[in-house]
Structure formats: structure tokens, C-alpha cells
Length: 55
Image (tube, rainbow, N blue to C red; front, side, top):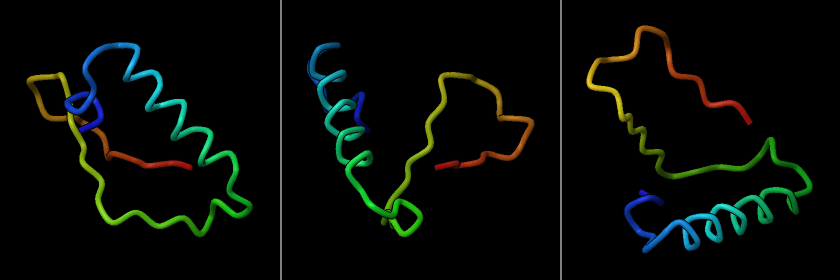
């Protein structure tokens, strides 16, 4: 989603840096909730292992 909403590499880096700054400023990241996670892959085959999201 973030790759689709940025115009170029500079915009992509700016968006990622802004997100990282937000997450670093949180006092208790263990209680951060997200309402949507979209998993994408460049591979044409399905993954062979479980997908893990680690914070």
C-alpha cells in the first residue's frame, strides 16, 4: 500500500521515516493496535513458512 501511494523513492523514504519517528515516540509499543495489515509479495509462489509480524 505504501509503495502504491508514493510518487517516487524520495516520497517512499519520507513516508517510512515519518512512520518510524511515530513508532519510536510511543511510550508503550506493546499496546499499539492496527485495524488493517496488508501482506504482499513479489514472489510468484506461496510462502513455505508462517508469516510472523514482530514488533
